[in-house]
Length: 116
Length: 110
Image 1 (spheres, one colour):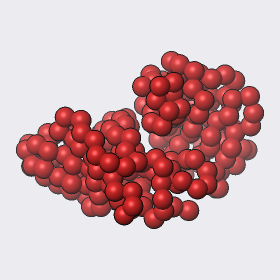
Image 2 (cartoon, one colour; image 1 turned 120 degrees about the vertical axis):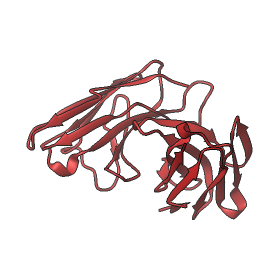
Image 3 (cartoon, rainbow over the protein chains, first blue to last red; image 1 turned 90 degrees about the vertical axis):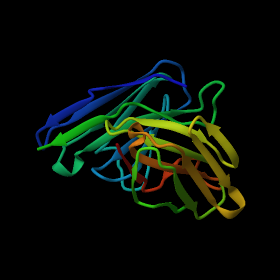
């Protein structure tokens, strides 16, 4: 498995502002992902964070709203830009393709965001 | 895209009871995982089970890939089993990304 940490664990933000969420993994991983979980809902994939290149976004998510960085194989950031109350969600990073454990996906503890 | 349906959506049981959660999927898959999200929001991977049967303590899972369903069994439930259980799959064809079902919310009462 992998140890995944996220910062911040929670935040309350004002509409119109931006928040950057950090995800740190204790080992080098090929695949890193960002998910959103709206209140009472399932998980929706925002994008795949690609090391050294632009992230691959899913339908309904755009780079201007959710810019992602992945400078190396252990770290990624997700920014939620120009926030509105509809962005209130849990944001989770996850990893896959660990050495010796190629298929299992592991999740960070999540960042709970409330936008007022 | 692939559809993932979980049933029941909600389940309330007394401590000590057994339960079966079901996941149906609409296309052939090469990856199926079960997760437990605890009341604090942490997602824990329970099983990677694209086919066959696995057991881990009081939990076991079976996937019948040819019939496109998977079952998660919880025996002798404890209050700590409460939370939401998600099934997630990768399609064999197309982008290799996990698609999640809507989850089963399990409440175990003491």
